Length: 399
Picture 1: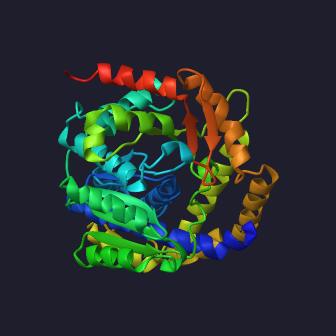
Picture 2 (picture 1 turned 120 degrees about the vertical axis):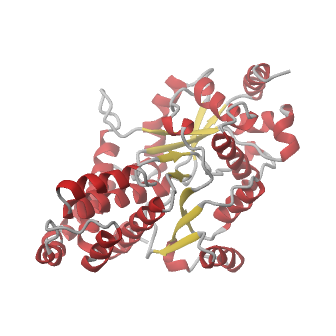
């Protein structure tokens, strides 16, 4: 199927409508005491960005003065303003031997549980920090790791078959993380959602623990950093060695070794400028689409819920907004598609070419860089190098 059949004004509108609902749900949950959003996948990043567009470009624009200040206060204590990215992506390859996706996702659930407990001596969290700070110094610790201390968090993710999120939910329940709220954006209007996973998610929704939002297509899914500016890296050999050498991992049947890192700004040598421009074009499309699809009735309801409807709300402008922002939208979509095609941004070879120099410069030893079909990055070490790195980590653990 051609890219122009997948990314169309219609599919972008469907995507933007879900982003609006992500924002509205997050604001509601913020009033109920949820303060942080966990972002576990690259595909959820553009959704989180577009959800913020609804707040800033639509809701905030309809308030002034005292109400404007009150609104910002509510925003700053909601999951929309505080997100923590963790690489729950369970990319697999031959070098991972018999490590399952469930084991990887269980590892990241344990990392998050350790952060919430404030137990930064937990071996799972420490191995994550060791990978980030010592193996490949391309990511960095974000402040929210020191602040997320409540089980009442939002988990924003994308869903295709439902297997991945169900494995994460099972791992959360095993860790006692049973108060979070799942905001899940489902691909292809749920056509690929498998029955046992659908039943699990619908049960959570009936119990008030999940919000399911269906879109025509998650066109940002598995397209790599060209749509998000987020790069996902795993270290397969490090996982296989650590699982066998570190008892805390083998005993629990969980292991992970990876980082997320953000890179959007153009480099000094302009080697990533095509990706930077592509991300800007996509986010402009989503910002515009949110302006077009945002419902005046829902906005009015949001302002009533926030108790800050004032004279800044202009019903005539709200009705005119879709028409004005829609004037050039079809052309903007064409220009975005032309940019992707011209620079082969959805080709994994482009991802490899742009990512490799930065990773090789940041890594210890001399790893081999590989890119999966879903644009996940893999940093391969020799078995001896992986064993040496794991021994360095083991030496940091309490006797």
